[in-house]
Amino acid sequence: MIQELLQSETLSTIPVEDPIVLCASDDNYVKPLAVTLYSAASSLKNGNHLHVILMDGGISEANWMGLRETLVDLPISIHVLQPNLRELSDLSVSHHITHAAYFRLLAARLLPDTIEKVIYLDSDVLVQCDLTELWNFDVGEHYCLAAVDIACPFVDAYEAQAKLGTLKKAIPHLAAISPIPNWRQLNLDGSAPYFNSGVMVLNLDRWRKESIDQKLLTCLRDNSNFVWCWDQYALNVVFAGQWGQLPPRWNQGAHVFEFPDNDHCPINPAEFSQMRDSPALIHFTTEFKPWKFHPFHPLREKFYESLDQTAWAGWRPERPEFSLKRWWDLTAVYWIRKWVINYRKARSLFA
Image 1 (tube, rainbow, N blue to C red):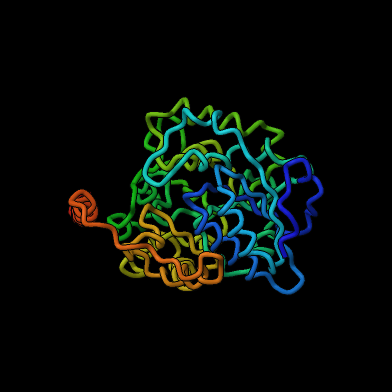
Image 2 (cartoon, rainbow, N blue to C red; image 1 turned 30 degrees about the vertical axis):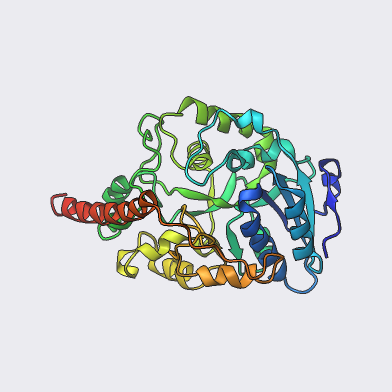
């Protein structure tokens, strides 16, 4: 059951044998947060307990009541932190992202030294396995463990194709060819893998020893003209060559469904199949969220199955009033995607 909502000074008493999960949310994400926490707690095997440290970016008392109601009979404890948003106010945000997305960069500073590692989960994740299994992965000397971002699994896909020779069919379907646009200026390996920051095991002990929070924030500010995907840019730049790979099934991004079949996938086909068909964690990436009206995600109903076990049972988004801008945005996204795929296919013929 939920033991109590605690303040940060008691975090040092959390038993480190149990999985410790770090999340960040505000009122905009409280329903998907409820799904994340409910699915994580209900997926635990008998006898296991989950400790969640929630970085509160602005959750109303009414929504706190809903979270308490949702988790009351589950083996989960919630510990609350309220980071200072002013420190991050100059960092860029866009689309569905608020400054709460940068809270994870402050993890080592905000959590006590007794917590040497933590699982970070975005608040749009549906958990389908016992997180104790993820907790038991050995982080070693890596800054973090993470899974490749299936939407853009390399620092530069064309560099990776030149080195690996296996990406010709996959490249047209990627969300981005080069998620770190200035990788050459930063002396990074363009063919290196690139990870998604929505699911990570963080080595906070190493972060503290090397003042990683300041390096990450400095990276974002020094490269502000090149930042793509917010916090994920800095994490991939600063951690280049020093992060460990999780099996891809531990972070199934929505883009996995953009590849027509295994012949077109950008990673090992067996791992791709596992990610698509047997995910441990379903991550509802991109701005097309399952809790919005338009049903883009093929696993949308799984989200609502869990939501119906929370205090928001029965909630569904209302059909929005017709808007020419909204219609055009959706139409434009579809046709731009088609054009990009066809352009990249044509380019490959002359490569």
